[in-house]
Image (cartoon, rainbow, N blue to C red; front, side, top):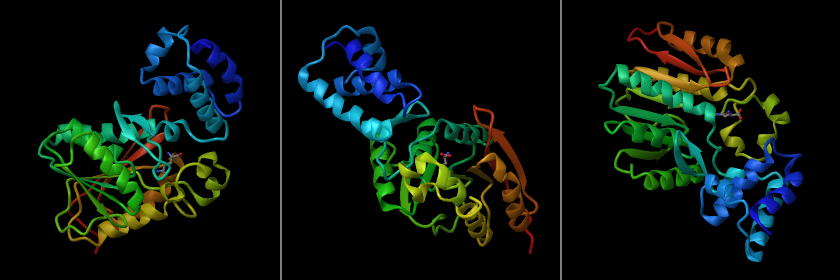
Length: 284
Ligand code: GLN
């Protein structure tokens, strides 16, 4: 059987679970053959061995049972880099690249930026992408989940940034006295209600998604923890759902009334990155 026939035979099996079955099959074949997807596209008449067909069919079966492709591959791309992923971490999303972009924009305007905290790092994709983009940065990446930190650790070694990215297991902020210049936080922000109807909730770690009743429970705690510190960072970036802006504004007003917030759209046009510039003034 050649590649093209395999794709044609198995594509209908995936139609109910995938928007683009051919793409998923091409990526899967490329992974098994150790080639790129463009190689697969250019060699559709290459024959597949029986062993390869069996192995591929097993993975197609996992796909049809709803296992996300990145977990089958064990890796996924984010911000132009490959990252290890396991079911213990959220699959890196394209919309999260916007947070990295916005952090880099800030760093371009503030070239003195040195320290970044990435709170709730998961696979470590934000921390590693920032470290790779800016050699001057030092990054503390935290997560409450030790199994997520193990994945982040692998990614830090994969990308040779272990000398500048430090992992700490903690619930949100690390117990470090000096505040960083920037905090990035892609914390769980799906409301418990939305989680019930969300397919990904059955596949990806709930601890990385569940933001409590209104989805803001963890961000509320983050701002509370920040406000209890003697000094605030200069800049905070949070990934959110558009409908949470008003709620988060309320929290911000309570803890940091003199701060300046902005919201940026993701590439699909949704308000996704909520940023805060802190002022030295505080409400007493
Ligand atoms: N963007 C994710 C989703 O909606 C949520 C990620 C998060 O909670 N941080 O699927």
